[in-house]
Length: 142
Image (tube, rainbow, N blue to C red):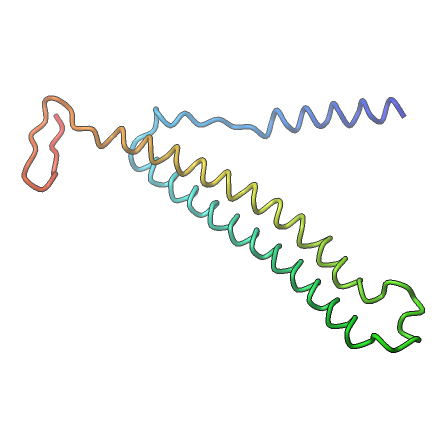
């Protein structure tokens, strides 16, 4: 048993260390930052969709179980199996809860990356000292 736990820990640390890739946003140009920002927005939107889909699956399972409980309340043959009316809710929880949890994590990661990218893009919008600016905010950099 100890060997199995050690193997899981070793593989878990290895996968964790290789999965983290750092991008230094200060070394990127505006085109790459715009692409990074677009990717972060897509990640945030996908996480939002997954979160609300998971919550909807749990809600649909709960609603189906509630309807079944009301519909088969007086039927003794239907209740012989035990908690048959709770099966849709249990399936909804088993599918919807992990989906919502993963969606929330992806949503918060995308939101964090988006804010980091916006801060890095704002650094490019600072007007340098030797620049000539026209009336509407057009800047020429030399």
